Length: 336
Image 1: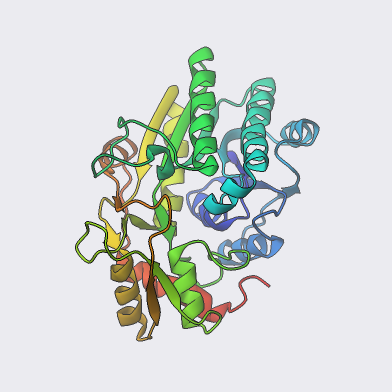
Image 2: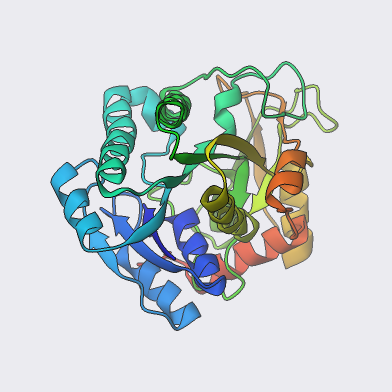
């Protein structure tokens, strides 16, 4: 089956591309390289030995996407394309709403025109907002604390409404928790623009000497060590969840939502200490005031994905820390 990956040259998209090829699918990438670069696709081809067709386009551009669909017989779409920085979304919300929602609307219109009925959407645990309790299950109330999160929740609603109106459409919504790690080859990984927003790439850049010290925001949360607790998942496990989701979408109709996490929460200092131990490195850090909008803890109940998709996270925290450093030390400047 030929599978379209919008935003497929990005961090999660590139790893998913590898796993799709490993599972016998034929991925095609559409990307405007806003959050990614062509080198990632070359590395995917190097890892797999398979050539991956790429369309450099904006997924909100109907004519460009329509032409791409005319040239390919897609069996399914995985929709990764979107702006993704929480802080930036608060500074330029209109751009986030325009980009992240327009791409989905255009994609659905073109899919309808060409009779493509299976879509897997890259959603996020941010749609749970400030949870009243953990672990999080799919039926819990939703609500967001930033424009990025709202674009994810709005897209979930758009996709659900589309499938309610079209009995042929199959929608799988994957709510990611915190992806970290990299492919074990060290050839593809997370390559953030500028100073990283996320914990693990910040740690690895401190380890590589690119940044001086890590800032730990808040050590007075009601958690075992006072630092925020999150559900960290290896990006390769996350990629494999998309392969399972494609198979599920091909044999079911309607909309299904799945949490994609490990079900275990680790604190910021758990991650720092594990990274230092596994890689025998020192990570200097400073405790700083809490950031506005941060919550004490957030982790998944992944049982539905286990039971329905037959998916379960296999890699542990040590794997995540080792693979993250392997990527960073071999690619000090990312793909550049």
